[in-house]
Image 1: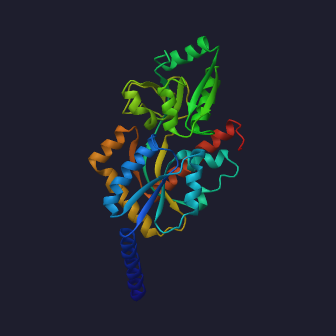
Image 2: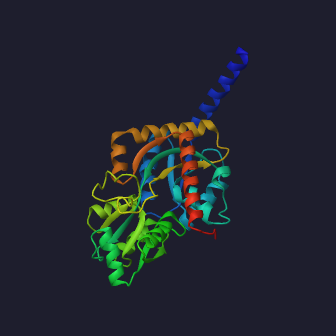
Image 3: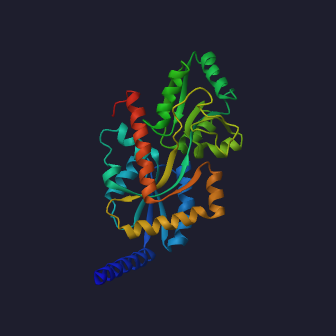
Length: 321
């Protein structure tokens, strides 16, 4: 028995050494499902820069934008399970797309493995500078008076949580709000800054910088409490719209079959990075709530979040397209 245990320990040690050596001589590709200019891309690049030093590798961020991250997810499924490719994503691609697209080309439960979670974040409603309303209540009143109850709200992806929220807001406040889907937060932000669309609903990381600069105004956020980076902005629950308290997530995924030693090494490196005061401050300033989740914890969080939104999507009568 002792001999078998010793052999097993040696094998594990050799595997770890081989993995570390292999990764030290390689390039790791980090897939991002949205274009540069949005919150997801910005966070991914902060992490990639730090991971280069922590893992002793070359990290390359590859933006495979389109279809709400679907293209990047399909690329991850097709990637080798050897630690050379990871996927940095938020909830939309992993938890929501499989609910709203009949054949997304991937199944997160069987094709991917959660590697490490780094944060939660809130979605929220923002108004462009050309919109005279200064608060959520002023916005709903403005839509009633200026648009005869009709309004357009930009969203970063079709069939997304922001799209469902636009519908729920319209139903709750008896407004005819229509979603305008974009290919990510960056393009949405460009049109909002150019006053091409009066309102937008997306993640706080997409809006925060321009909100602080006074170039647009956030007027409501999801969650059971206000966000620390913008304590002046009320939650939807405070405004009479409850049931949207669960926060979305950010984290890393790998192809199923990736060696556990690779996953553990990557996860441990990320945990140490986001614990660094300068990194934590930088990420927090981008509008996310830094929260380390081990592979097991992250997997449970993703599963629970997906179940919650499965119920919401079904209750809204949405049919997968």
